[in-house]
Each structure stands twice: as C-alpha cells, then as structure tokens.
Length: 339
Image (cartoon, rainbow, N blue to C red; front, side, top):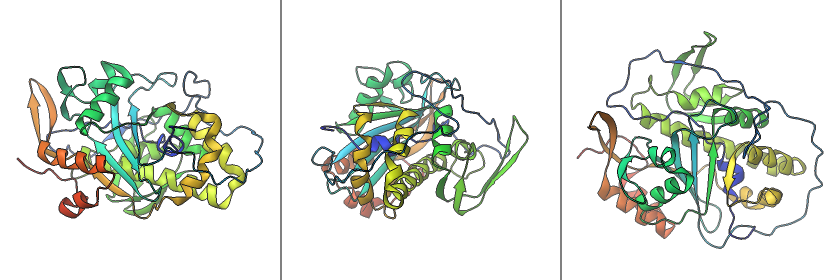
C-alpha cells in the first residue's frame, strides 16, 4: 500500500453533519430528521444498512506497516446530500487528521464550514463552497493552502446515508459527550437525549448527535468537537475489533471502506491496516480546530473569520509533524479568540 494511509479505514466515518457557523447560538428545540440507509446506493460508495453474510477471511500473520514513512495527513469531509446515491452537495463537515510517524499520536483538526478563506486557484468564500464549486481536488488544495502547504496524502468522503450504515456495521459508536443535549426528531417525533459523559450512539442517533448545534453554547464550534469525538469513537471500535477479534477485522474494515468514497487508497489491502491501527493511543488524541476570531458577514452571508496569525502557527506545527508546542501555548479549546 505504498503512499496510502490506514486513515481510510478509520476516518471515513466522519459524520456528514451540517456544520454551519452562526453569529450567535440559536434558540433550543431543534427539529432534525431521521434518515434510513438505502442498501441500493451505488457509485463510489456502497452503503449497506444491515450486515450481509460475508465469509470471514483467514487472518494473516503480517506485522509490516503498510503506511508511507513519516507523518500521514488525511482530509476527511462529509457532504449534506440526503440522496443515498449522491456524494455531491456542500462539504459541511471538514477535518484534517494527522497520524504521527511512530503511528502512536493522532491529531484531529476541524475547519468550520463557513470559514472565509482563499480558494485554491483564485477567489474567496466559505470553505465548503470549495467543494461544491470545484470538486474534491479544489477542496483538497484549498485546505492544503490554508494549512501552509500541508501535504494531503488521501481524502475520504461520506454522506448521511453512508454514515448511518457505518454506525450499524460497528454496532454503534461510543463517544465522550461534552455537552448534554435534548432534541426532537421532526420525522418521527422521537425525543433524543444525549447525556454528558460516555455514551453509545446506535443506528441514526450517531448522525443526529453529529448534526446538533442549536442547543449547545458554542453552536457550530461545539458541533465540530462532536465530529472529532465521533472519529475517535469510530477508530476505537475498529481498534477493539483488531485487538479482540482479529479474524473479523478485515471484513469490518472493508465494510467501512465500502461505505465511503476514498481516494488514494487500495481497498484490497485493508486487512493490512490492523497493526498500525493497534498502535494509536486513542486515550490521548489531540482535538483542535482552526481558530476562529469571530462570526461576521461578507455581503449578506454569515461567515467565520479565521484567526490568521494563529492559523499560521497551527499550520507550522502540523507541517513539522508535532503540534505539542502549539497545544502548550493555546490548549485544545475552541472558543472564539477575538480580534
């Protein structure tokens, strides 16, 4: 798997939540729809709402690290398409994942979808429009430019339907929930409560969890933190399978890969990812966000104003492969920085 990344098997489960910034926290009482996966979805992703009978592969005794030497960076994003066959729309959940050269340290950096940035190739606007107006490569290059030329080794894309399928394949995603919230699902009237602390998100609840922002104090910024919690929880689930049930790992990891669109990744080699996955210390994930100075407007559009000096410092840290100095200076908080 030369020049490929294990992140494809784990990070593609990022919630395709709608991740919009707003000027102020919105009033409580959000009403969010449930979505049911369509097993007929096709294209680059093959969602499957219920597990099918798949032969269990014979485990291989390989300890070869299939990753490229050095730090590995992945762009992970989710689109807001509700069409199970579509991976188009706006890139409403955007995140950069960095895996250290020793495979032990994982850093997740969210980018607010309304961040006002320079587009690769010219122009300015909300970063989510880099995808809707120019496709995956334009978003990839825009994120790389924002991060000081950070090399992006692979890209993983997901949507609502596929995220639900991934959640079901894993038997749920366990997260450490920072903000207790309560919401009502508009399509069913079901009230969903997410208690603070360690919780298990099953079926459509993981998507609902990742989309919520109106009942949280920092709105979109809190929602982006939930995206990072979902990524960590998804990786934890895959890691447990790799350690406790290695004979099932290849099947489970293949199901994850099949429920997303992944570039620069050979799905035939997914079984080789168990060893590097086991090395990640998921109790010490660094959870960050591209710093936002304030909410503002450009024309009639609400945008997130990026703190450019601090973003340059973050970019330098990521490009060096070590964000510890940045974290020591600023911490892992994501409140508005001012300015």
